[in-house]
Length: 333
Image (cartoon, rainbow, N blue to C red; front, side, top):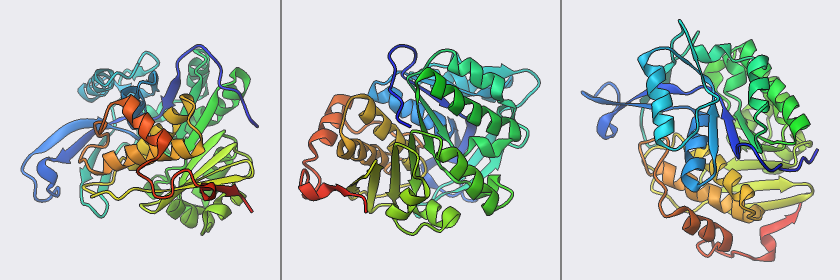
């Protein structure tokens, strides 16, 4: 199933819903806060912003409403260097909104997105995205859960990528509140993931969806993707490519708020792949970005150092115990 990354066109297109975000100031809980910050966030646009900060040309594709929140979404993404020329503003529709109730052990998120403009994305929109011939397309399991139209857009875009030679990454990103039942999510997300080049999934998600209790079991459930990356919280991340297994432990982090860490990890891994890092280097760059995200109340944290320095840290791995040892990669049993 390997497809070469083609030259020309945008480096990466991230398709999904981006919403207006309301979050308390100074880390207070929603019921305690007297003031909140107004921002924007979405899994796919979080990835696009991080990629842009790293130096990869990133486009965000999605629908917003013709309301002040939609204007804010597009303006914020542009401010972060993300290209929005593929985005569409839908007359008479509204932009989704969510409230974040932050806590170090895990934030609660309250969504107000039913019937939003993003639910109208469809196969025709996927054709428009494929026509610009991106080198890489990033998708998540949030989008196919929004509506049948959105599921059609995701599946169509994966099929079209096969024709254009684009690589496709898919973050499972299971959100129980968006699915009618766990079994429906498990079946749909596995079917989509198994058609992509690169899949990111949390071990906790895999346990919930497919009863996969180990990283190796996740790979066995997803045999077709070129690469499957299994993230085990603050312990490690494991990548399977073909018959090879590469594991890299996470570095210690003082967690302020964990939302956005998975998106940051995906952006780090994708950027690493595009600049030629090996499997361990991609995992390390993912860890570095995820760690930065967890030390910030924002879904997308500032980079801790210059992009070139981050890539160098990931490449050489001097901060990781036992870096470069033969045991880092091993055959997958």
